[in-house]
Image 1 (spheres, helix red, strand yellow):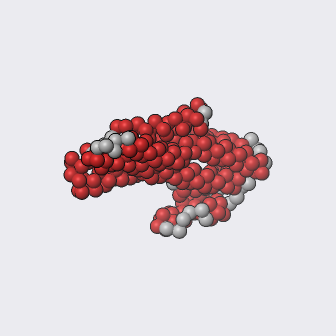
Image 2 (image 1 turned 90 degrees about the vertical axis):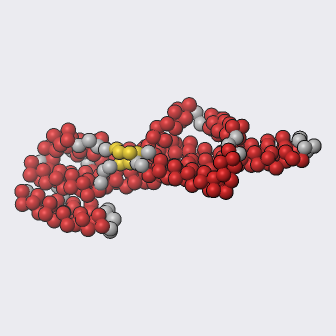
Image 3 (image 1 turned 30 degrees about the horizontal axis):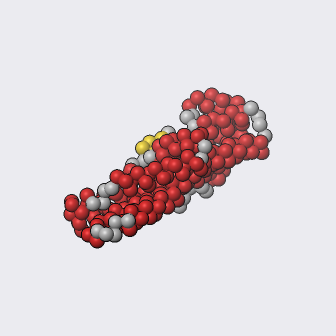
Length: 274
């Protein structure tokens, strides 16, 4: 289940607001207006877009919107809930047989878990299940990498095009040397493209790309736990043993303490039923 990740927009907003407040505090409203230059914005944005069109194909560029949307969402799935699910599946498989798990597919929203359950119900060997599901993880990782690479390249191109815009501004300024009073303002405008490119790269493109990389690592971690859970259920492991095995993935923090307070009662009731 997905929900909105408010930290990403909050972080971007806070960064831009602090920069604007710093400018206003030192230069006032009139000085702040001098930091706005349409030509500089066009050079940076246009240059980045042009570089992307050269570097990537149409299908990869279409991923940009989807990738950006993903950075503003977060996975609501929690490890304790995932462990409880596999304990319940293990108990049912021990009581009613592995074929009884086919009915559980309808109640599980996660397609990866559903696929693993169906493979287990079909009697596929654990090694084969492991290979099939790991192949899907590898494919997912490659898809995420292709989408994230667009943002990484944007982070590389934006400062470079900012510098190009600065060089263009300097050339125009040098052509106006006969008017000394225009040198200061012209130099300021020339430097704005570097400012825009650097801010865009370090406050948006690179942080978002890093966040997507962290999300991918988290997703791989969770899917590895799912694989262990599926194989454990299929092999008929004792729910208590499966619980201890999957609990090893939990971080040793307050969430683990809360889970430990709940798990004994949960598993104890399940074992009594079995």
